[in-house]
Length: 263
Image (tube, rainbow, N blue to C red; front, side):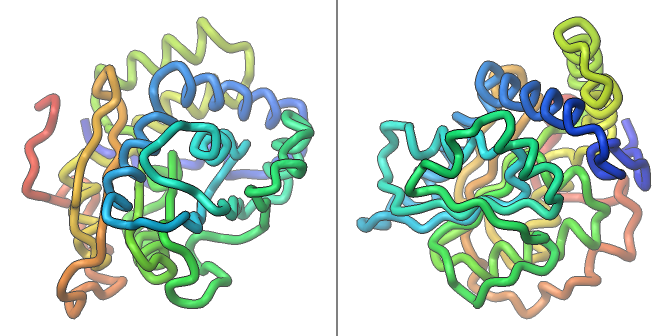
């Protein structure tokens, strides 16, 4: 299945219907909770910070409803978290998140901020770990690599990237789930489209390596529909130019890991 490039998800367009946005964020929370998305991020966080013996400062980029940061803070994980700064580029999404969960601003270890992952407003190595879940598939390769570079830049210890894996089986599952388990129009449109726009595991690894990151661990969702990568800075980043990926079509991005599903 070829990646569907330059197709806009409705969550990336004008966001004027707050009820629809809130309903979509509620659906994403359910997906992260019941299909293991939050757990994948926690596992990768434990991996990337395994050698760190102090509480972590974490940056969550493209936070949506901030449900994964909340899960990280609530988890009896093998790492301690000092605080999480959760950012999203859309003020409408942050407003809907607060409407969905009025207690967000009362969580003392969580800060909600407006920021774009392509150009983060933080100095180098401001956080221990930078995390992004269900964000990379929204971006074309050049911007996806720029996001990875920004995550690496602001992280002292490492990076966690959690996203969908493109395959026909995943697309069918997303379509069925969206149309039979949700009445939300954004979910109906965006869920199967997200799979079509997602990167295969080799493509995702290629993007991370081109951004100066190396894989420390990979974690697979229970249905193979999703992966989390624990990433650390490469020993050498001399070849991590932002334009390195943009010259190749997405379908030609190759990595060193075989596809979970060859079709």
